[in-house]
Image (tube, rainbow, N blue to C red):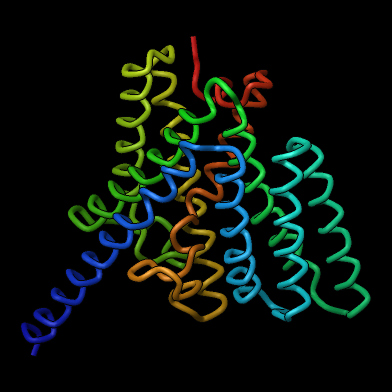
Length: 283
């Protein structure tokens, strides 16, 4: 019986991995192509993602209503448009206005206020961060590509290291499949991307960019765990069914959501109003 069960499980996992790879081969060129072009095409990609993410996110939180979905999606779209036109700080003000409105509406309806307090920053901040990073005329394209490859390398190395090594769980109550070995493997993958980018593109210190990349790997894994916790609380396996092999769009970008915000914060703390340079170029 055990061998029969194992034989059924192995092909299932193999088929799931093939589906994930095929989906990635279709979606990655689209994301990279629009990130390369930048401008309004990239903003349009984020706008479409904002709507899909808002629908999935509200479904994972208490008080999922059409009103909440429309409000969250609407303010996310406004944030993308305002970032493209007026910059990130104007967009963040709009996001804060939306959050205030949603919380006030929840209080008037005697509904829990923590869902909008989580949902609005979770959705709007990464959208603004990604578009702001791309708006850097000199380093924006490189910054987005580097960030995407750091997150993808983190996910890929963490997946294979976790499966090959196993060992103690990273956060068993929130995401039972995550292991410490996977985290270390993901950090290694991010370090390789960061050091390679610094050397290949002559961005400054490979060691420092590798360190920044490793930090973002940890942040990306934290984002993965956060989304897993939301799904576990909602009692679902995936956030949606939009992407074959991956579930919903939140399942695909859960690490990017937190990593993008962290990258933007690093750029600000580095003291550069050119965000791409601020996060990439180290002495």
